[in-house]
Length: 322
Image 1 (cartoon, helix red, strand yellow):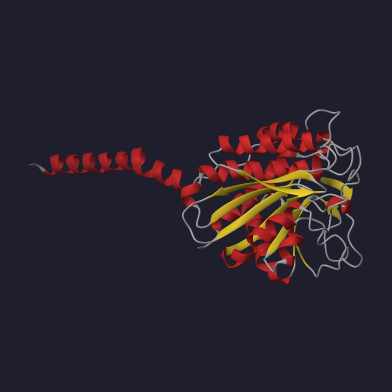
Image 2 (cartoon, helix red, strand yellow):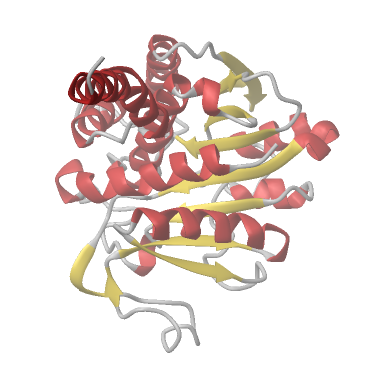
């Protein structure tokens, strides 16, 4: 064999090897590193279904509408491959129910990802809290598809009766659920509550509890991670995930519960049972002046930024260690 023939044969082998890498190994590597992202179009569909008709409101007086929403949530989760059960309990001789949806990836520890689906009085509650419910649904869709990458199990929970008149009572759906899992709290790494995640306005002025406006941004174009000392690592993990995505700004607030608004959601009931829990929020009434009014409607929400919030949730969960 001549030197020229040998060189040609070597080049042919190298070319074949590179072709193999391109055809098989590189796509496999890209697939391993790729991650589904939240879709604004999906969020719109979820929101429309949760809000429903203009004449029905999912408040504590309208059990039929609450049941419609909870049944739809369970069916939607089933389509994602996650089976749910109703956690039913009685208040004043009337039945109410949480929707509890475990995603078992074969691990001993788990995280809880939740949002309440009821509203205050006769309002559509697009931001409060259809946005949070839609966020948990879209996170569930992605995490169910990425189940093999999970290092902890995930329990998705949709709560009833977060709003007045049952707020801060043992009848809150989140209190009922927190109490039911308290005996196994050592296996719960963290609880993440999505409470109003859809309202953003870079031009609007952001309000704060007394004393905080000098520390945090004056604009209304960020997502907040709110926790207590026990949950400070949770808030750091979420903001770190958001920082790596490099999209929407994330601000942490670690504070005792006496600061107004810090415990204004379902995470407070897990604090009651000494579980690490945090709230992911657009800051509610400190930003959204449509809070608890009839103007809290779908057209006010920024679905693109909502999707970024959810991408951060998904990345945070997938980055968790065993």
